[in-house]
Length: 130
Image 1 (cartoon, rainbow, N blue to C red):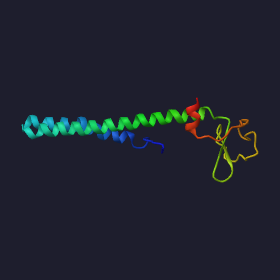
Image 2: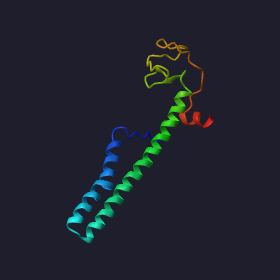
Image 3: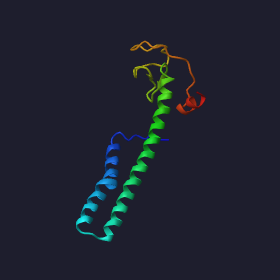
Image 4: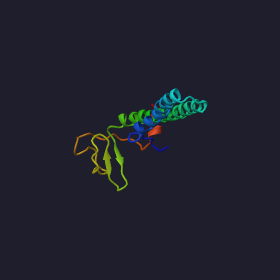
């Protein structure tokens, strides 16, 4: 599953949902007080419904994102003394991010962490065993 990340658009979605759920209905209510009409009440309910749906879907999206973050955090907190394979044949130190670690290295030259021997497993396999 691809990582969900709402850092750059989360506030915008909440803002749009609040506009539909609160601001537009309030404006329509004020117009309805000056010029009473039955159709305006329908627009108020429709706008509140759209805003509620947007907010509900975003909070479901946010709950999924937070669950993914918790699993990723669990994975990396249990794998601080490993070297992660990169595409270019080198490895990355999980502790400091040094990307110049070689396969034969047993210690990171930057932070001094001694690498643990482990078999490559996916984050999901590690989390399921803990």
